[in-house]
Image (cartoon, rainbow, N blue to C red; front, side, top):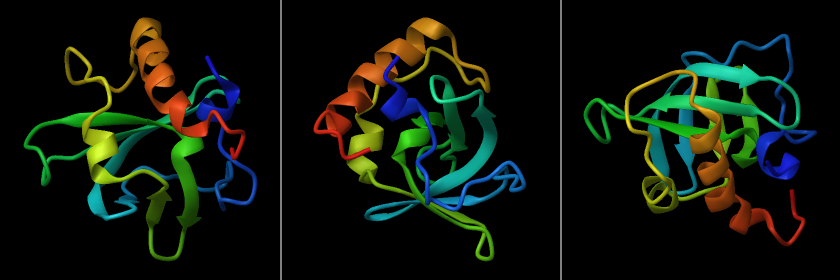
Length: 121
């Protein structure tokens, strides 16, 4: 997996002292949901699982940590550098979950990796 996609960026405001569960998630073009799980297993497997129930009933999406551009702990909001459509177009899991399987993370990493191929992350 691409470490640039799966690792939280420096300077985003994310730290081990912040529990992101329950934070709102804002895409470039609007709110998408709330974080229900955070995996911060280092630079090769960090991601957030977002319940997008208001946007798409009963659906969860996984966003790689590299998509997080800023964390506002005071407002309990995580900002990501992708649009709602880009998130919607990402590979979907076969079931609702909090701990995705490696093959799904590989597909997801391939999808999001194209956005960060130029080394910006």
